[in-house]
Image (cartoon, rainbow, N blue to C red):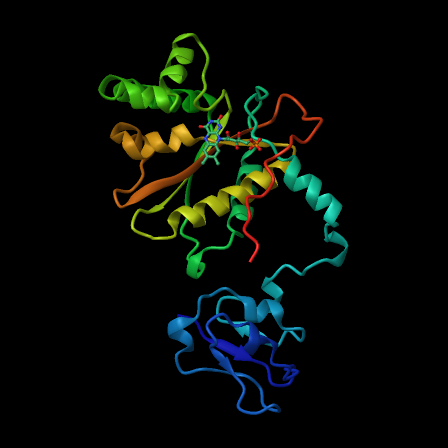
Length: 274
Ligand SMILES: Cc1cc2nc3c(=O)[nH]c(=O)nc-3n(C[C@H](O)[C@H](O)[C@H](O)COP(=O)(O)O)c2cc1C
């Protein structure tokens, strides 16, 4: 529930907010009138803040968001296509980390940036668990190995096919391939019945990963890790996920030990042009 204030003295009557409202919840009676909320505004407002963010005259305020609460878009911070291309294609999954933890303010900033991801109906459904201590990461990785051993016992062929047998053999040989020795792991979880939980959390993790790269940090998706959270009750409970939640993704995080010099080739797009 939210209400909107439109400053008639500032309003340019340009209709931009009307055009940009995702729910079409702003209307203009005539070309010369100020926009006003539709009767169902409060019921359907997604609280996306677009009306406030797009108004060139700073004429709109929501109960929870005024123009001065928003960070201005700085023209000098626009990235060029060349910068964007190298940044986006040069991100790598990092699997060798320095023996150095990430300071809490940086972890907090990563989550703030992750929260800027798009989400269905602007639900922002992600919840986070940030494991701050490297020894805890290792202990949780050992729980993933426990789960893998159980899977190998009951379904050895499937375990081999999914690489679990090799990962457990490596563990027994002293090599940790679950969290790759990263000092941190970050888990995204949310309501298990939310139909877009997977997409929303994946997008948030992806922003976190990219922003981490800009800070000289590195990430790698922990596919084994979050599969185990959902499949292995002791790990689920150890992490303290609520019963009606599931893990939608996890990333290891730390300072990369090595610098990548080149961008590997990817498959050409598999596309049908219509
Ligand atoms: C859903 C998902 C799960 C993944 N799980 C793991 C994992 O458990 N361990 C790992 O080392 N890498 C994992 N990865 C990383 C992929 O192997 C990696 O993205 C891929 O090889 C391409 O490399 P790049 O990310 O450096 O471009 C995962 C990636 C995704 C998207």
